[in-house]
Amino acid sequence: MQFMLPFSRQGKLRLQKWYVPLSDKEKKKITRELVQTVLARKPKMGSFLEWRDLKIVYKRYASLYFCCAIEDQDNELITLEIIHRYVELLDKYFGSVCELDIIFNFEKAYFILDEFLLGGEVQKTSKKNVLEAIEQADLLQEEAETPRSVLEEIGLT
Image (tube, rainbow, N blue to C red; front, side, top):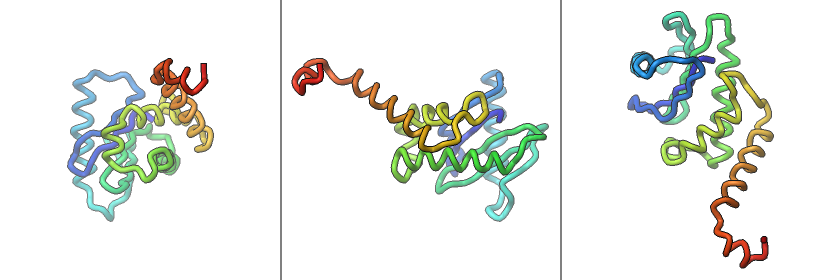
């Protein structure tokens, strides 16, 4: 996978994860072109399209489109499954995820994506393993944010 771009029906980019080195100017140009292309497509049209020398795979969930670019020889159905698995992970973590969850907790959405995909390849196929890693990170973050006096009060130091 070369990149993943979740964006709203209004064309607002909500996250962006690039797995290939590109300049900011090129990223903006690609984003603008792809968002316009995907939003212009009719709902009955397929979720795959050829664009430049890449295949674009996208799926709409509620008010968000999840758009990925893959190489010509890569499998579109596996990419659709990757998108679906990412949405399932977000759903499990946030409890019925919505666009606002991603807007206000974008660092968690990125963390979940990074735990699931590494360098554009699936790192962990098990939802359970990904969610366990995220829970562990949340516990570490909570411990780091909890003042020492509170820990002493409840007898954890």
